[in-house]
Structures are given as C-alpha cells and as structure tokens.
Length: 294
Image 1 (cartoon, rainbow, N blue to C red):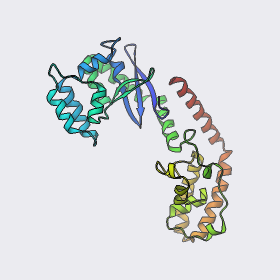
Image 2 (tube, one colour):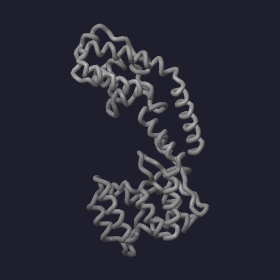
Image 3 (spheres, one colour):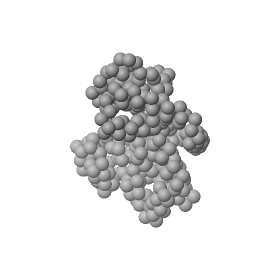
Image 4 (tube, one colour):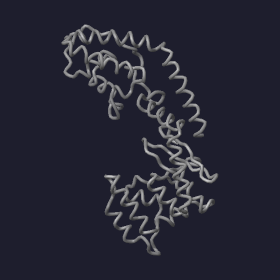
C-alpha cells in the first residue's frame, strides 16, 4: 500500500471490511462488502450490481456532481446499454472508460480490490441487503467518531504537511539550521515579504531555491520540503514580522532581527520537551501503522 494512504477496518457481523483514506478521502472496500453474498468470488456480485441501468445512472450522477473530468459521452453509451442481457460492466472498465473517481481498483495481495466512496459503497450494501447496509453505516459512523481513528488521520495530515521522514531534504536545507546572513543579503531589498522570511530562515529566496532544485520545484516550494520544526519557527516569524511592519521598522533591520530570532528559537525548540514528545508519539504511530499495514 502507498505509504501516504491510511488503512483501517470496520467489522460488520464478524466480517472485516477495509477502509482506505487516500488524499483525505475515504473509500470502503466493495470487495469485502461483496463477500456477504459470495465469499469465494466477491468480484461477481460487484459485476452483477453494475449491470443495472439504475446503478449506472446513479454512478453517472455521482460522478457528474463530484468529478469535473468525468466523461459524459461514454457514460451515456453505458446508460443506454445497461440492463440488457449483453451488457457487461466491471469496476476497471467503468474507471478506464469514464475517468471515474468514485470507484477505485487497487492491485495487491493484501491491499488489492475494489473500493468506493461511501455514497457508492452504501448503495452497493443496500443492493446486497438493506439490513446489511444499516449495519455498515452504523459501524462506519462509529469509526469516524473513534478518537484513535481521528488521531491517525491527524498524524497522517501532519506527516504530509511537513514531509517528515518521507521527503529527502535538499542539501540547501538539510545542511543548514539557520544560516548567517551575508552582507549582500542584509543590504538587498526584497520585493516580496515572503522572501524576507525565506532568507531569514533558509538563507535563500524562493526563486533561488527553485533554480537550485528544478525537479522538486515542479511539485512544491521551499516550504513544502522543510520539516515541522522549521515550519513552527516560520509561523512565529510571520507574526513577528507583521508586528515589525506595523512599527515601520525598515526591511533591512527586520531581516537581521528575524534571522537572529530564528536562530534562537531553533536552538530552544530543538531541545524542547514537547518536540521530543512529538517525535516519540509520531514514531509510535508510524510503527503501529507499519505493523497494521503489513
């Protein structure tokens, strides 16, 4: 499974149903739901369900509302053919031909299968059994209220935000805590206030970073590729800089002050107990996720 995804489960009538979080969106395993009807060949109930004109119409409506890249022409063709004896549909074909996002198909021995947005998964569960659908909804709602589940999502969001442990820092950032400003930097006038903060903390402007990291620049900026500690200091510098601007402190003086403050805060926070606890908890969560996802 992709390391940026979260995997968890709900249990309905002693049956385990996998739930994936991909890009902050939840998908419920249709494959696991289908085992309610056919434990040995779960793909068959899914294909039978997708032959219905009503189901195709529902899937198309959902995509039309939620997917701006949905291929309506291909959908119209399927809608006209659905319900006939010769009509056959699979999740893979639906995704491939219509560019659908409500249903996803994943390969893999342990994480493979067909997953769907809850709006769609609940419809499939209802087709299997109205009673089964109610139990699925109940357990899914219970999952979303579960504190451990929410903490898992929060930690995942934090890792994505800071890129901690998953993105290799560039040498320009990795080898520098907070650089000492050069005389040229102190005298230079920066057009963007954001670059004042970038230079104070990272020792370079956004443009300089992009020029030195052309491949990474296609996916983000200097702030996307730093760690949580730098982001916290950056947030503090933004507040301080705003106050200095209101006090009409010249940019050159502000830059020097911000650079000095950044270095002091970095040294203080590196040994701060809260940050040590943060790293400890994060490591525990990462370890637990690794064991769960194996």
